Length: 211
Image (cartoon, rainbow, N blue to C red):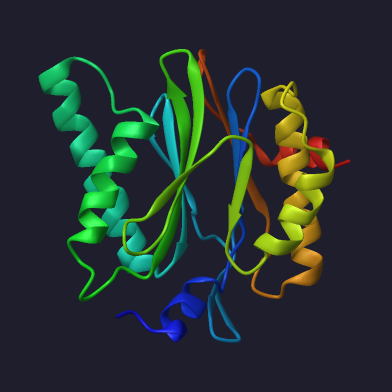
């Protein structure tokens, strides 16, 4: 059995967000990495592009998370060669769930959010350290600043919002989380996925969104 301290450990040190929109998904994260009370990096990458229609956010142990990013990218390459198409959020979640379930004795210290496009549908999945997952119909957040971020998103969410509108709210939710959670900080990253593909916002664009 995985003890309670294990789950408490993965909650610390970040805020990541995923929102389902009318025309795609919007995702975001901060850029701070911490070791207890020590800020070990202000340039941590917590959102990873897997393919043009799929992205993944990471929270928890950096080594474990980066290994899983590499694994799912490799699976995407193999799948693309064999099937002539890329992994969807659903298929990528199934693969990661199996990997995590097979390592229950020595679990990965991670919590993951996968988001993207699946044919004409837009999907967000939240995956726990032992392979359990939830398909979120509206939004989700992970990390120590997630409660603050979720409180804001809960109040403004509208299923008809566009990715452009959601990107603005993601940036604002992250900024609010930074004010209340010392482990969240040092800038934000915001990405969107639509039928046109993957877009990462520049710092200048995020600054405009945050106003």
